[in-house]
Length: 206
Image (cartoon, rainbow, N blue to C red; front, side):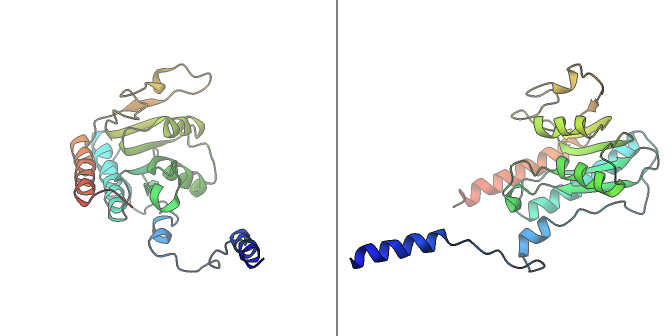
């Protein structure tokens, strides 16, 4: 009888709802990693061309380094207003902190940009990302009506812009997407290689 009672109590305890910390409570690393991304830097980038591409990718690399410092795969992204050259939004990977496999830098930056301009149609913007976008992020670029993507290093495992798949070459019924890779590719690739080299040295995660 006592054994049955203890088993019933254990089941009851297991079924009790897990209470999250109150809103506003400190969530240490996860909180900083999932904070709302910066929007609209005050300074403008150079005019459209190679100089703007390099400057925007440098900011994306800063986001990638910040992601690595949080234990995330070092990928960063920025969304730039094509007309004014201002940064609409910037973001880094947050997959580990959010426990969300789709919390990629590109997708987070596009979401933040849409919130910043209060319009999901980002028709006059360019997405810069340090790594070739995957199927999810490239598909999201179509959904957000992004006209142009510039990326750094190729992703031979998951890249959807020529490395694994070539989604951007498929005919779309109402939107075209201009994709160009190789901008700051060596620096972007080195960040990733160094990150995974260190992870292998430390050993598998528990």
